[in-house]
Image (cartoon, rainbow, N blue to C red; front, top):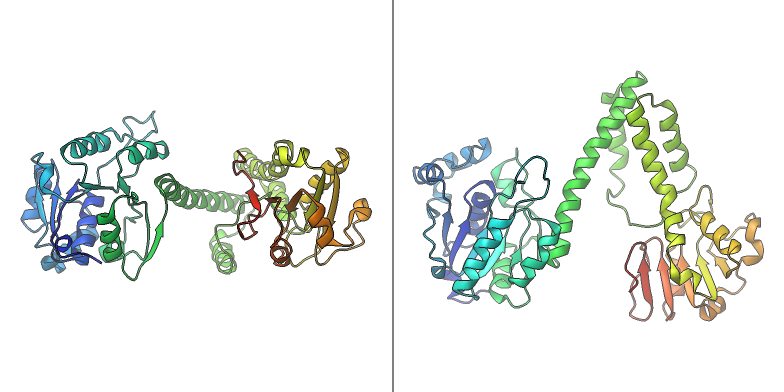
Length: 416
């Protein structure tokens, strides 16, 4: 919790736009004793705020200020004077739009220019960046010992919802106890995800890209429906209802298989008439096919192992269905390269004649004697089998729990 002197901190927010104003409201709502100043070079914004008007052109913010003037009365908007030394904590919420339309890279130069100025005045001043930044900016952030609190603000919703978000991601410099305490106070009773700066930036990028591509997929399927005289306004809500029981973000792995996914994905190609739409779906299917092949051809652990155990050859745990399972490629590759291996899963089936002689008759013994285990399906039982295993494990489903004994490698994870 906060010490008495930390309860009376002087806080500056650089940038009085959408992000800066929401940040100020969130901070003031958390602690009434903090002296909060929003710094902006736009005199018009400053004047509008000081007259009790919204400094940004946002319907919901205008409505919020009109209905809750007392909630902003203690926040000050002013032109920056360059005197950073009077602040304990400085948040940066500046715009980082690309310099031009042809250059998609975000222009973060001003953020780091101001951050260096602040650190040159006093390295003890805590800096928290809220602006959207490039993934490779993480090194500059770490070098300057800057904290990161990515914004997930959603335009077009009530201000109250934006300043009371239930889930927040933060990257806190290990030496910054002030920010650690500050975040503990403003995120009390909220879900807080603490990570490093590089991962925090990537979380934001993936979150927004995931949403963006869901829009693309919706438009793609709607186009195909229209081509085939199917009313997407009816089937869209039906599919959405069916998907409610599934997690949107899946575990990364070797790809999908089974009786339904591959066949229905190819069926969509068959009824798609527009060439661009057809190419996009084909590219997604090709990506799935290449996921397992690329892994097999680039994995030295497999080539250098003398005895391998493959746990699970069905397309997912709880089933013995091997239709279009990606592990078919794995088994063929192991046989072609004459690598000694055994396979096993709880519902092992003798119909797998292509390598029936490879089915383990004593899985505990085979695991103990192996120098590599490949987990190719997500059976819960596999976790217990590997509790005492101390050699390498390649987890194609990103499923096995870490236990401190074995080295677990995920698909795509560095093996240095």
